[in-house]
Structures are given as C-alpha cells and as structure tokens.
Length: 235
Image 1 (cartoon, one colour):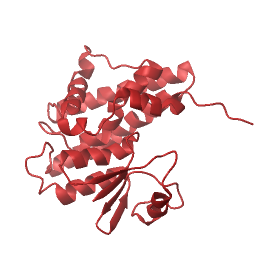
Image 2 (cartoon, helix red, strand yellow; image 1 turned 90 degrees about the vertical axis):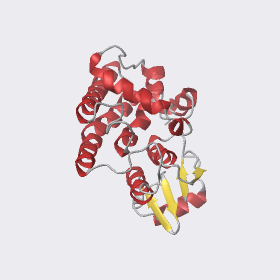
Image 3 (cartoon, rainbow, N blue to C red; image 1 turned 180 degrees about the vertical axis):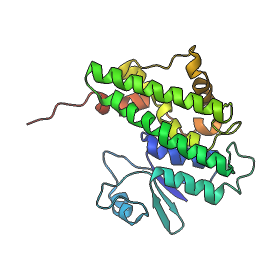
Image 4 (cartoon, rainbow, N blue to C red; image 1 turned 45 degrees about the vertical axis):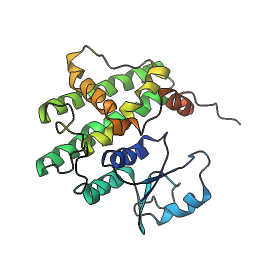
C-alpha cells in the first residue's frame, strides 16, 4: 500500500495514525502542499471520493489498483479491511454496534465543533472573535471529556485501547501547541471538567505508534504561520 500524505495536515494524520496503530506495511509518500507533485495532481481525480474539479488533497490511499480519497473514509477502510488480522496491536479493531454508534455521534457532535473552532481561533484576527472561538473550543473539549467518562471511563473513548473515534479528533489536539504559541490557548489542567480529556490526550501522546507519526511543535508552528498571520492582500 501507498499513502500520499503530508506531515503538516491533520486530516492526513488520521490515515497515518491508523496505519501506524494497526502496524500496517504502508509506504508514505510526502506531498508538499505548497508545491504539489504534478504526478499526484494527475493521480488525484481517479481516486474514489476525489472532489470533482477540486484541488488535489491529501490523504490518498493506493491499495493495489484501488485509489481512495477522504481521510475519514480511508481510516475506516483500513480498519475494516485489515483490523481483523492485526493481532496484538494497540487498537480496538472490533467495536460493538453500540460503540460504533456512539463513536459516530462523537465525531459528528464533538469532533465537528472541535475542528471548526480550532481553525476559527487560529485564523481570526480580532480579539473578540478569538475569545468566542476559544470558548467554543473549550466547550467542545468539555463535551469530549464527558463523552469519554460516560462511554468507557477512559483513558480512551472506548476504554483501554484507542479506536477510530479517537483518531478522528486527535490530530487537532496534537497541534494545540500552535494555538498556544499564536493565541495563548491552553486547556486547564486542574479543572475537573477537563480531567478525562487531559488523561486521554496524554494517553494518546504516550503511544509509541503515535509518537512515530508526529513532528515537534516547532514544525507545526512554522507550518501554520500563514493561518495565524496571513499576509495582506496585494493590489
């Protein structure tokens, strides 16, 4: 298998995290998102799920003669196809129907606001807008914390092992150093409302399979500078 990815992209990280946690033999092909390889641009439209007429995006998975786009779909595909044979891996490869339903709700109802407010906080240039986004982001994290507590008690959403639900939201949490650097954002460590979230985030970061997929904070801080401090448009 080959995964066209980019270390800076949290969407691509969903696929690389699943591949790492399942111990899959995947060749990672790094795509420079500011100067995309013409071969990748030409390949992208033939992938299932490719945005019609849109710019070539990562990730794209090549599994034999099957090309697949869209991060969440790729992550689920890898779990469905290869999870059952991945013995001894640190991943919940067989969630129950109830757990799948709860996971889908987490991604939709908590993951959506978490991701959208990550970008709103980072990209908003006004103090009032940043404050509103920070408040909304903390609300999403509090909801995530409650979901972990009510579903399994932790440390991960479904209990002792991470699952697809954790992978779908973790890449943005892993990039919170960007928000700290540019916007002074932090999650209270001693606040009981975020206890389960903080334990979850630390547990994810401690996994060796996760460590191999992430870069130092400085890498993301540099990579997201144009989001936080966009250059004025020229006439």
